[in-house]
Length: 178
Image (cartoon, rainbow, N blue to C red; front, top):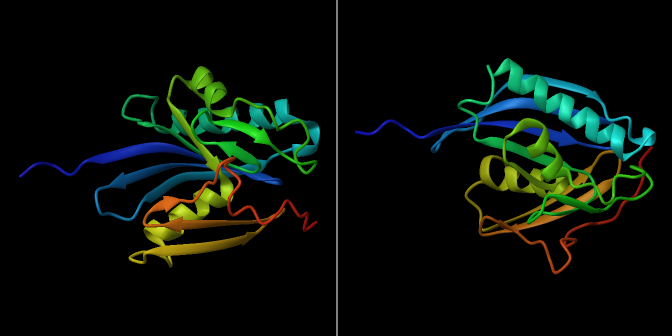
């Protein structure tokens, strides 16, 4: 009998008001285990470079608490804005996060940490989590509407996020709630 495959990843969630980070351990069929959770202000109004620096610092904090990059598979990132999941780039962000659009988020995190980074829109990631581990588990499809600094939405069909031609499917809008 072989040992279960266990993956450990750095998780970063970049929202309009906070950046949350944690170490997540995932075993086959097991619910993810979260440790070393912390959050810091995004400082979005200070501009995209500040947000990126805060995200990198958050990733480095988790990597240090995990004992370094050995044994880590990578970084999973969710971020506000329109994200190209193929490149990890922020292709659009409204004035809630000025200067965030055009950020090469995945490449920047990889360059800073040496770990591969995968990036999704924050509500797309939320919906995928709900479909796999939450209220949508075991269902064919799952619709998620999220209210935070803005309002977003995403649809998961048969385990896949419906992204659309420009990775904007499900985006309800960038409506400020503050």
